[in-house]
Image 1 (cartoon, rainbow, N blue to C red):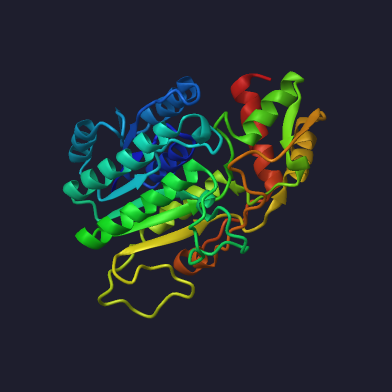
Image 2: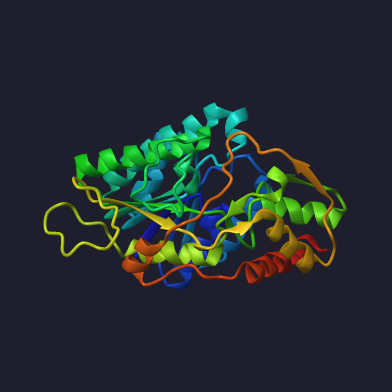
Length: 336
């Protein structure tokens, strides 16, 4: 199998590339090495991948349609996994145009390049943030996602809609996966686990929003990429010739397009999450209580029944075990 992965130097992309390489796939990575967080960490990830047979890398921005097209033509992928994006809820308030450029223009370029290269299946990363102000929990793929509360979420919902339109027009099979608060070794420095760990180790206070009454469906990165790998083989069929319906399926009535949640289906309160991290680090955190931030939601919770029906797999890594793995990696990586 030949796979092109965008965002291959990112947190999730790095882990997915390793898994695919372990299984003998030929992997072409593409990453823009943007400075949203320190590119040195991204280059460390890419350097590790570069030691593996079967991996090649291209440094290019999604907004550069010509460079993206060349990389896609050279890779000749059977499958494209589109992970690259401008991420972050709060940063989308500060720099919304970067989300338009990367998430809208970039995704359009990616879809056009994948279609031209003859990819048989495109998988696109979305986010639990698209559920926004929907009060119904747990979130199901067929629930409404029409009330985003951050511009980041709005751009990701727009990419889902663009993908559906192109899947319909060109009969290009597309799977969209919505992931829920991914964490683990080699994680992003802007995410809570990394920020909290760094602050506690350095003796600095951490900011805790909404009095710690924030609930998140934490998903360990190895579980996430295993789910994505299994979904690669579950190509959504077009309207003609479909077999018996899968319970709760989100298949489009007019296109080979489907959306799938990937989460642990076990929300944890933020204050309890910090307790677990303190225990692993062996020291307490100084907690500065802050109000809810614009763009945040108080709770996320994934219904992953569809993932289970399609693949026979559901994420299940215990949060304590996952946090312990992250802390072990952080200590080694940072020498503390």
